[in-house]
Amino acid sequence: MRREIALFFVFVTLSALWTARALPVVTSELLTFTESTVERESFIGGVGQSVGSGAPPFPYPSPAPNPPTYDFNTTATVLIVGANIQTDNQSQTNDFRADTEIIFGGALQHATVFPDNAPGTYKVVNGTELLSSEQFINFTYYAKPLAFFTATDFPDRRYSLAARLNSPRVVNFSSNALALKQLVAVARGSDFYVAWRAVDPLNETRRPQLQDAFFDFGVMSIQRVPCSNAGITC
Ligand SMILES: *[C@@H]1O[C@H](CO)[C@@H](O)[C@H](O)[C@H]1NC(C)=O
Ligand SMILES: *[C@@H]1O[C@H](CO)[C@@H](O)[C@H](O)[C@H]1NC(C)=O
Ligand SMILES: *[C@@H]1O[C@H](CO)[C@@H](O)[C@H](O)[C@H]1NC(C)=O
Ligand SMILES: *[C@@H]1O[C@H](CO)[C@@H](O)[C@H](O)[C@H]1NC(C)=O
Ligand SMILES: *[C@@H]1O[C@H](CO)[C@@H](O)[C@H](O)[C@H]1NC(C)=O
Ligand SMILES: *[C@@H]1O[C@H](CO)[C@@H](O)[C@H](O)[C@H]1NC(C)=O
Image (cartoon, rainbow, N blue to C red; front, top):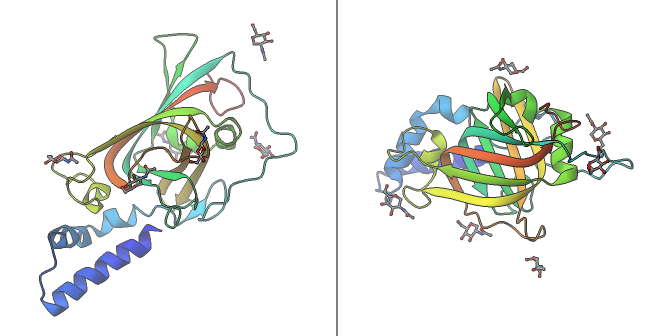
């Protein structure tokens, strides 16, 4: 999805240079952006080989005849941190073509499991493995867990490509409670990113209040993840 936009930006920039006509305020942003080829290659929300549910647009799976069951007596809070965050609440552009998409574009090496029955203890796990595990992907789909999402921009806007794509100072941070309906993990060469499909936890047919935006950093805290059958141990 973002590839078209990236190409569009390049096109706009080249057209501006060609006509030597001053574009409005965004021009310097776009010029900076076109210099960051390496980063651009690693921010490609929506393009790649899926480790779960096929290529985008990601279809919403049909439930299996015998869906997995979960024991919620022993659970944990799972905390995921990432960089290059995008929130997309438009059906026309988001990779689910429905609800709100939240992409964590990178820095997903670690996740932390905080067992609910053993306060003060935690376990650091491999985030890439957790987020691409079929059990965790299934759990997200079948249990629609409650999650808390927060993302922010680094003030000088040079940290990530995502922040540079954002119009400066329009959306500085984002935070909301969500119900997660779907998780898609995509591996493409050495890139790995995930896309969550999120709805309002108080009304799962409604989008959560989240503006379209790009951010540097983000956190997703997923509540009450069962300690068995959902990709984690506690
Ligand atoms: C969960 O706890 C309840 C109440 O203690 C118990 O009745 C139930 O059997 C437990 N479920 C499982 C799957 O262990
Ligand atoms: C996490 O797991 C992936 C896939 O198995 C592996 O490539 C990567 O090196 C691991 N990362 C860490 C930090 O151990
Ligand atoms: C995930 O769910 C599918 C049904 O949607 C099932 O076929 C598959 O075995 C499940 N995988 C795991 C690891 O539980
Ligand atoms: C975002 O932060 C900048 C300062 O870094 C500020 O000027 C701007 O008004 C903020 N935007 C919003 C929407 O709050
Ligand atoms: C839930 O959201 C839908 C779509 O916005 C709306 O039509 C419906 O009335 C809402 N339901 C409740 C109980 O608020
Ligand atoms: C979606 O994003 C647009 C643009 O930022 C915003 O105006 C709108 O309120 C957002 N919708 C929801 C449901 O958050």
